Length: 345
Ligand SMILES: *Cc1c(COP(=O)(O)O)cnc(C)c1O
Image (cartoon, rainbow, N blue to C red; front, side):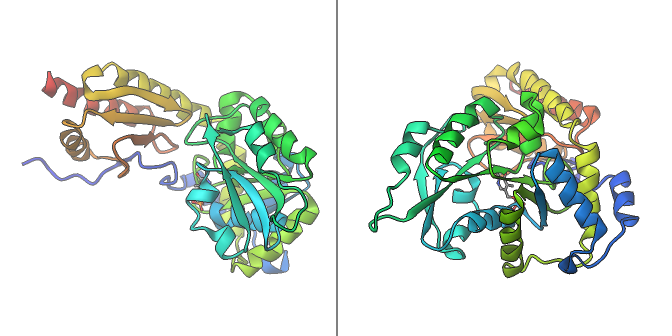
């Protein structure tokens, strides 16, 4: 009987990381206050640091990326206003329709090609000032998109199209720093395409909780009120903000290690050609596999026995590399696939 091991290599997402000892130490020693009064020094330091890194006036710490995106959209749009968004994007697909349910805003959906919305579609979507139409107020973009890092030069034309018509631009940068590191762009140059940017601290950056929204002072002040309305006012939040601050100071450059490991995983898996229905591909820290249908159940059972946990998506699965996957664990992942492959030939 093979021993039933607890999975110790979790490739479901980069959200599964545990705070490192140094990050826990930063949390333990964080100076705190009551952030609802605005006097938690660690929250203020995180907000100011994030704003400075992205070249914006102000920042706001929020419990999640979903609340950050929702607060941003509602800071830009009144009830009955419209935001234009790609049909693949998280705000439209994966945030429980919050912008419509809680904000009375109207998403106008346009196609996404290669992670990008197209200028012609944006132009066609923007409504004239006419009683028949909602008011077009905002364009929402995303980076990275399913792990794909979009070059800042590719975001500029859609952003300029929206701005020329008087719309604001929000960038859902849940994995903003993966995009910045992968494309070799300065964070402020990437952020410059948008009026507001939301960044998750709890994904590749390795903090336990939280996102930060940055933008101009007036917009962030409106988002602050909306955060309160959504129940997102936290008191001694500095314990969490200290982890986020530590992540911004120590875990940005190392995202390149995740990308390097994902690339080498992808290359190694592509050697095992007979396992795949289509070639394995890689985007920043994510590797995508589509096993031959006849093999997938046996492959996933084998990986589980090897202590490797994968997400439930099918037929294409995402293997996500993160802070808690070092070179040793990566080798174990590769060896586990190789072992399975050997049994097949
Ligand atoms: C994860 C994610 C979010 C939401 O973040 P949560 O903290 O899970 O609410 C938003 N947008 C994108 C693109 C994401 O990947």
